Image (tube, rainbow, N blue to C red; front, side):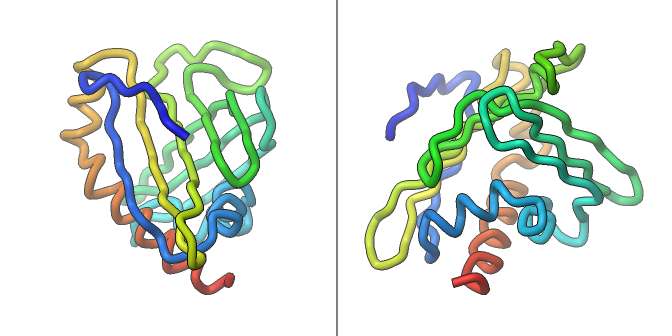
Length: 157
């Protein structure tokens, strides 16, 4: 599954993960699993509400250094075990977010032997927003989260 990328506004992380895509998809779409790996430790998810369907809510709240941060959005596209697209441009009920940050495009490609090519795209509204996200530590942070996801998913096999 390919995604048309814009190098000025899209940040991309690709990893081969030693876990089947069905388990990774379940980890992304089930609150009981997502809370275990979704933010780099020692930070933690404090709330998670997912309604995994186009237009359904995709709400997470996490704690970073004692500060809670709500991240509310909606799913735009859902293809079970293959693709998830969600954004904070809108919240549940298609209410515009006054300060949107990004749209995430996740793909899960079976590469055999219980392994998955996992691609995460963080798509931004402007070059400046993408650069800001990069400077915030996109690659290190999202890379750490993918490692945590893999470790957690392996425990579910």
